[in-house]
Image (cartoon, rainbow, N blue to C red; front, side):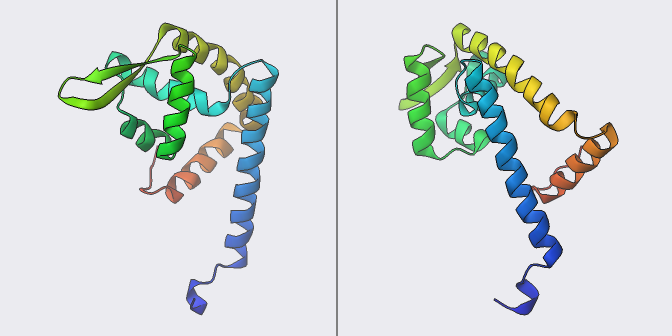
Length: 152
């Protein structure tokens, strides 16, 4: 690694804080869901993407792209969601082995109940700690770190 490739002290500090804060916020949101007797946050992410997709649902590879879960994790998670009646697996007409995943009515209700707790966690953990201007600045900075960069 060349000297130019070494991170600056500022980059190291920012990285460490970003990783720690991210982990802490997710853990606290997970704790709130658990205390509410609700499934883990990963379930919400999948149910949210399926709800956003509408009646057409999504293929498993599309869920992997949208959630960034590994294929083996999505397969296991979808099996659990199906066993609990939160999603339906439908055959794809032009692909004998393919499946489309669609959220069920029970899945929509579970997602709604989870959002009541998860949304409150976001408000308490992020919204209450920063002003609207600070939230916009943070969002813009994080958007620049995305690949590809996003701007809002």
